[in-house]
Length: 502
Image (cartoon, helix red, strand yellow):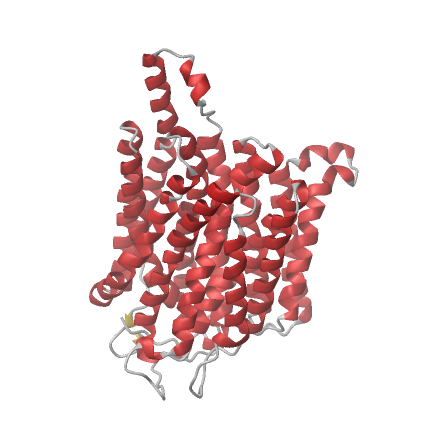
């Protein structure tokens, strides 16, 4: 599945011969939304199933372990499959596989079986893995190579739109159902206890059946939509664009910046997922929040990633018009304001306006401003921007570990803003200059997403032994490595003739 990442074009919309890739990018971006939404629902499943099955933190982290282990097992076979059947067919197969996974939630809840839940998550993640292997490099190559990071950031912003909506959706349909503790259940008769436990588990059936229908519908749309054809073996797009490369190795593994990039993907996904997975229980323990309320605040963590990706798309796109950049940035601030008002419910204070009544919204906007400043310090250079954001994220996690109450909460939520562009930026830097090995590199990078299985599990072990508050040490180490990759690790060990500058 070798795909060229160096396709010459006149702008992000048109390549040589006037080929318009905008419709293809729009349709592909819908995939990013879907898998972001589904993946983030795990953060809602974790506290719910922890209560339903009375699990420890280590046991409940098997949800993320199972989900992200699929990336390690399925990514490379997915690359070979896509090489044989093509990108479009691969996307359709991925969507239908994911639909099978979401459908399995129905019998899992019906039998109240944690094992079937884990099986469903593995099948679901296998489908999403196939989607990622096909879609990420596809988006990266449909346009000018120097704006690949910006283009992938924009698509990932809609991925974050899915992750922002998912916690709200899950909190309303899943966490709003009050799970009874052991003491409360003991007061019920054995028959009523079993009935209530089944109802607890069954609260996930309707949401996941809805997802099954959506996935099948999107698969049908893709089957009917005409996408540009990538000729893997010849490094050629269907319109005839070709590119030659110098200093190529025999395989993708020969490129040091790719290998270091795979490690960066491993620790980034692990750190991001570890934080998101613990937020509901973290806020419950530190602030005494109800699970449903805490679940809505998780939307600010993932919503922050969306805000940051929009900023990244603006600052890394090479837009020279200062007025235009400022207008786009202002619109992103308005979006941040709306999200914060909704999550904090401070829109209810509009009739009696006081600054204190909008304290939480203003706090979030202040953090958004810091995030925008960090992007501008990056000076439109992907590597430098990545390093600055990673260092800031590590500081925020440390602050949260050393403080309590609202300060600790807002510090950890702000990390989402700085997570924003890490995955797409690492991805585009890692595949830079790989030529015919780009497809193999995509499989390697998607395999590295298994970090989302390993690191949260170890954080669960830490939480069980030293407490949830100080178990966030692992993400700190993750962000420090990413900062190294942004400053130095992404630089290829051979002279580049073209590609992503950073």
